[in-house]
Image (cartoon, rainbow, N blue to C red):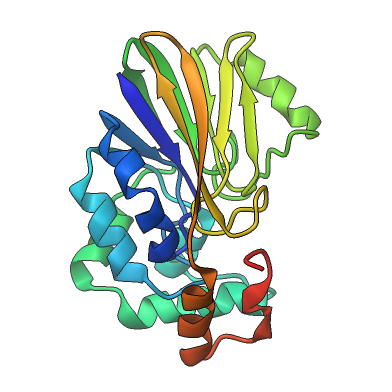
Length: 221
């Protein structure tokens, strides 16, 4: 089985579209949350994801849309959530509201556990590669644990549980202006990080048109 792991699309359909051919080759897509936020192609992203064979979990920006963001949220966060609230269709809102915070089960012969942040704090944790809390994942009885949130990739396949963060499709902080995803062939356990260039100018222009501040270029240019 070929599994595509994606995360943090953030309403950036330009970036997601650059990965369409790659995703079409996958037997299963696992999306680790944050479908909305920051950018302005909310329904385009969710409509496309809903048509795929996907396992999805909720991200913190998605949660902010459903439940409200904290009073100290950054302007970029508020903009993305407020815009999503104004334009999201009823069906897509209902779909988001059904997503779990974490998911565990068997895919391709692997016991898989997924969440956006961490298994013990799915919405708020950031498991960067230098976070000592990563060691706590070794206590989980799964073959593979996947997470997102950081917008930076992290791969560990030399011991179980294998750890996988695909980075971000819509706002990569590994490779500026590239959409990032990770593909795993469960028959060979070969893992492949894929990066695709996309036109960030269209994303920036659209966001500015809808009222984003100059901060919109951060992490895109």
